[in-house]
Length: 552
Image 1 (cartoon, rainbow, N blue to C red):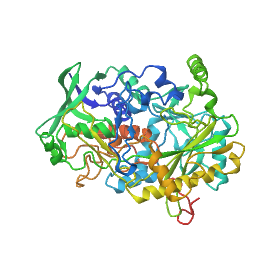
Image 2: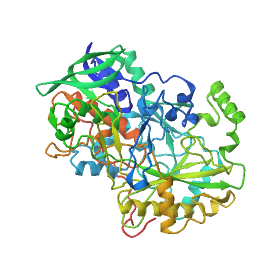
Image 3: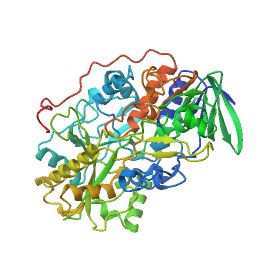
Image 4: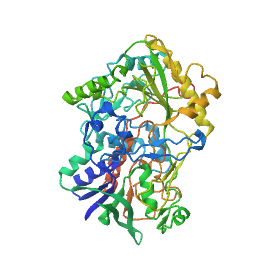
């Protein structure tokens, strides 16, 4: 088997590239280990906690015991299904802040400033406000990816925004528009009441052209001869075979599996490769390093009125929600229920938001465990720019074995300071007048958890990953010894090979990573095709005019 381009991974970026390369007339083979995304548990937005906890759809990765979290091992779900993690995620859509991408450019990812990437966000989006305001001049209208907002008819959802404003923060009609900072509606990748994954947006339309073939198999290594990649060795139906690329091989296998595949192919730290008996093709110390993620806490409140989604939490309630969705794609199941959000700055002197909130009108965990208190609500809160860095390394040279994932969470004192600040700022928001009709008491951390020591103990035991791993194949200047790919996503030291997914992020962006991952696929496609990048935008983002002296 051969094609012009062979892409490893049918995730967010891989699907986008398959679409754009086939649109340009090229043949593409996409290798994906996972299976179909059919079935209501993936397609129903309200069922989001199920697929990310199902071995059928999830690689089932866990971190190594985290030394600063008392040896806890944290889940690291990654999509093992067409659409990748866009088929099992929370469907939250965040572009990232303009300054995130300006920082990328300063770090050596030249041509990836906000002015450079904004046109690609516009190209990928088909955005609608769903009647809840927005910033149309900053949004795309005709892209493959549907982005919208939930109904926002639960009083808790609007109370969260009102409380933020009462606490003195900005309101924003569109955190993906000119002004990220503030409280406002949250956006989701849904369409007509169904999940709108990268598979739906990009892969299926691409396959309809007849130029894209999807192959189910496990990529074992990149075939490289005399410094050039020419194919992918993959295990397909129990047999190992080479799928040849006439032009290039592109890895888009996630922040976990992309560095793993590079290392299995002889690209990585020479000492680490030799320890596993892997011949060295390119000594790139940065492969698997620079691992970043967002951590978050659930600040949970018991509700004094039966207004939360807990009324649907019984077997009968869930059946009712499921039936309503199956019949007409409406009701609570048609939304991910993350319908209000906020991005704020933790203190004066921080130029742009460094804390994110997801608000949820029920007290429940990602693993589907509801609070014993019954009716309640919660804010997911966490810092955006942790200084902690981890790594992905090989456990063995066996392609079927999971790699070692060590995030090294909370390894800096700043992490602890930031989280304590997050808790205290959240408590202040929940104490505002807008929540007065709804608050009974604080479930967690609990009103008695006040001192720095008590908060640290709570953080250590309860902090969870937001499932945003990135950075393990850092994009940077070709002279940077820790860079893995150059600003055109070409692997440094090997020709005919690129990496394009969240692994190339030099630094994690504000918010959820699905939107930026798709943007990487969009922009990388133009680099792969040798096209001039889309013209840079001259739109200026909003920055708080008093950021140097005011926290809000």
